[in-house]
Length: 586
Image 1 (spheres, rainbow, N blue to C red):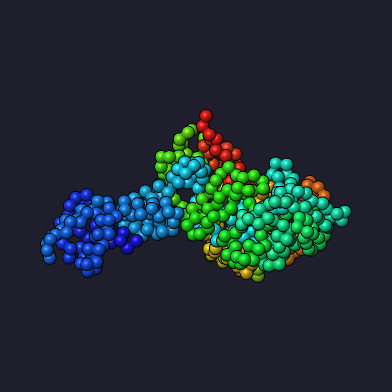
Image 2 (image 1 turned 90 degrees about the vertical axis):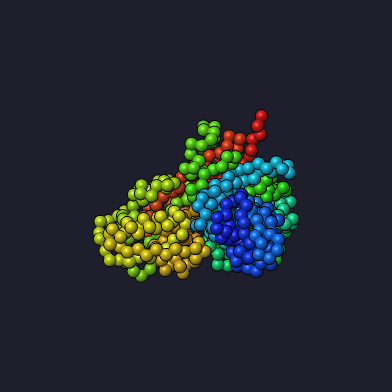
């Protein structure tokens, strides 16, 4: 990096220098420009000449003039250097060199962003045999991929590919099916469940899965303070009976128990590896999933198809998720990736026309704002909460902010009450993430409330900080998103009971007591119809309490190449990597 800086200083410091044309200069003048001795200047010039950046013909004798020929423009060299870092798999140094010079080199950032954009999507490499690669970009690295600790949907999505739970929920049939198990039995009381494990299932580090791993995975969630401990609140004990049988004893019968077991947070981990790695397990975990983790650092995360995966090897060979900032204002280079976002204006109206598949889905997850009715202050007043709920009009927010924000579906599609009272002079704190959509939502709420004389102080926090109960309890309002999928009742339980979400901490005591009874009734209900009726009742009561306002769901639109098959967006708006297939040209 130092020699790059010296080359730029040399080009800028030589008055009258033109790239590609000889320039007369003395060694002493070069040394002065580079702030070094003549000897070091000679060494630096020789190094630059070796790199092919310039040609140096020293004059004979002290003080004689030499010929300098710089052959590459400084901005081209900076861009080339950044590209070399990226091609080595080092994204952070590339970002650093671009960031250092983009202010003084017009067009540098746009050229870099355009070049980077061409790498994302699905690509087929033929150099050393056919390798099918999916590349994506994210804003932050994945510091924690431990199933019992993950907070973000992006983390949870990776957990799905690295690990497996005992059972899987089938979104089509809406039933729970065996996955790491052959089958299960339940006793007459409904409180004892026995599972028979598949034989020969391999962890990524080569050891076979046994019952002790299952017990360990459940017990580590039961023991420690984790965001997802609510999942095992009904479990009294779990024990291994030999190597391939696991038995659960519940505190009381729970008709949702199988759905709870299908959650990604209850994925099975290898006991020996977790204990050996300690805290490092979160960054480089090992599971039984369709992909194994090759790399996870602040530049990129790399997944590789796990050849002996018990449920069948994925077609996709490799997934690379590069950690880069948003590439705004960059167009796509020629050389089309096979998968791209239709939400991005840069891709609208581009190549392929109707031949490209458009895959659209409304995320089941939803953005919301919660009101802290448990905290001493104005939000203890139900009348004030109703007034605030009326101010924060989701329909108006969606109209004003636009983007991918869409209306609500499912058990969120119901009116919420409001009043026309006035409460000027109140100051409230609003906590949220510094992500773009959260920032826009928070600013909109602040402006909306300001019109009514209510002052909103916005506090931006990391996902890890905003998952801490003491932070949530301090906030008056929290703008967050709730994870919802086809397991609607379990999703509602997570929304209300997860320690990392604000609802559990913002509910007034009366609502908590009422919901505890309704949750118990839901878990005891024998039919899906009964549970849906209870779910609708709970949501209606929460909206009547004015403890939260559902704001919107996001609509995701993707464009897929005609030869790319089985592109499916899940309830969280992510693609199932394990199902993607490339069709060969015929």
